[in-house]
Image (cartoon, rainbow, N blue to C red):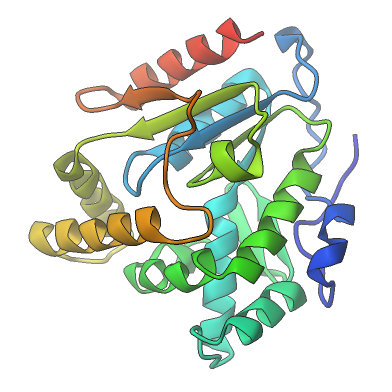
Length: 251
């Protein structure tokens, strides 16, 4: 099985399709009986996509593609360099120059573990610049497609079923009520030592939802053929059980 790196330094967007991702050497589980199956999980912030997708991938023996970490890493790298994130050309240049590795559960930026830093509220607020940058988005989507080619992958994000993998075998749109998503986000922040009141988290989440739905490139929207899963009142195990059932129906 091929090993690959997500992003290589000084590679133009046109070369992205020739690049690959470093997932490690774990073999795809043979019992699933699938070849090159893509499972997309899209949805708004706080819906539990990352945890559900990662757990589902492990259960199926698929690889997990955390596309959100890619956008966060680009924004974080630009901030570190003192780049104006509103400068689209400069932000694209940063994306082309940095090296990101996903080594579950770690995210490495130019060899440094930035896993915790990428999940802070500050970086979350900056990530919109990378997500709404057409050049950056096209570059990363090309990488995502190259990394998933011929592989069994569970990928999560905002536009995985609509833009990145429109022909995916199984598309899921995972969501929950705004209040439930804000509560989960507060728990995540508190676990990382960040304290915010519920109303602040809910308000910021609402702003992010609006930006995600309104942006011109890769807007948040369920694919026409996606299965809607509302997770209010469900434990993570129950959510993953349901997602696994949906995937296996597509075998």
